[in-house]
Length: 469
Image 1 (cartoon, rainbow, N blue to C red):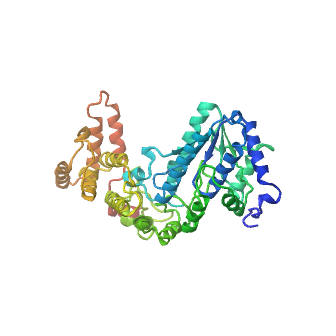
Image 2 (cartoon, rainbow, N blue to C red):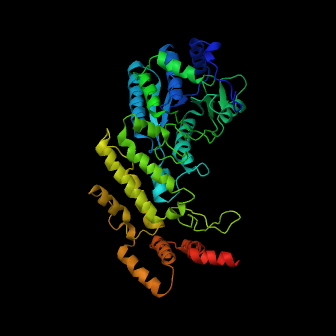
Image 3 (cartoon, helix red, strand yellow):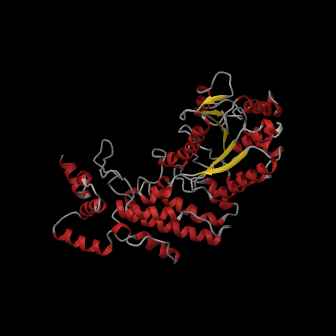
């Protein structure tokens, strides 16, 4: 026993596989709520889905009319190899369920445009996630899954989440499972969502139990579980589970997950895939490693601004050293160009000539954010896209009367002549542009006051004032 975890003893020392099937059938018949299975494509969630399928197919058709939804979380920055595997599996599940009259329906849940990784990283300038600032988990995983669950709760009143969690995964997970248990029932309360309960059929399974089951019992929807085992061997990885609350540990280390993940120091699963013959993934790994440099304490000031999105400057606790905050606009431009070039390389060298790393809707939103919040009067996004791809998207022409590069040059000259900070005047003009034409302009005064309350001094002026204080 280590770190308070139970030993990895086989559940089959005291139960048979038929006992597990019987428990699942009992739970399915006992509770009227529809089930929502969290599927990540990994060994644990595959085991849960397969166990439930095999158990329910033994029921008479009239006893398996309750819906079983299968949801897979797609952050839109998942490793392409894993995305392809999950897409194929979801398609097979739906086709087989329809053909055999099983009550399963599989679909993906994804973040909204406003919450997407690229919109926040490149568009808003959020620094790449770290273990101390994991802004991605809530936006990319928890919110999409919980939105789906809340929708089903609204439709059915209550739902039961079926998850591939095991007590031997972590002491935190084990404690949470015990804390929310409802007496001797199969279910436990969801820690965050009212109207949702959680059922964990493999809570007592060991890792060996999981692989023994998968390699001995064929997939009922026609997949080959040995392909999954090969995927694990090639990536030397664990799985990145469906995340429905903040108690789920970060994928990190060598687990399947987002190819841009900077929470772990190395992406050993990507490295292993490349070593196993997936050389076309190399540009993705190189970008991820470059992204790590932007959060390196020794180098992050090269890439990041001294002001946060709130317009304030912060000092490190107990020091007079200014903290690095959001990315500089030039860094964001560099990121966008890198991602677009990598997308071109992946389409040229990978198995999918239509592979998409960043969607056109995200490009439009990044452009809007740069023009309205980051004073990109040069309108850089269309230029960068054209330079990399040699073509254009359907960009709006002079949408909403934005300022342009010529006007920026004119304003810069006026500011220099009058010794005024260009960024401050540009922001005030942007607020005025937004309010132009509105029937009520009561908010413009407060908007300008917020702009004036931000920090507009140079770094040298700030440090001089801090030293004198």
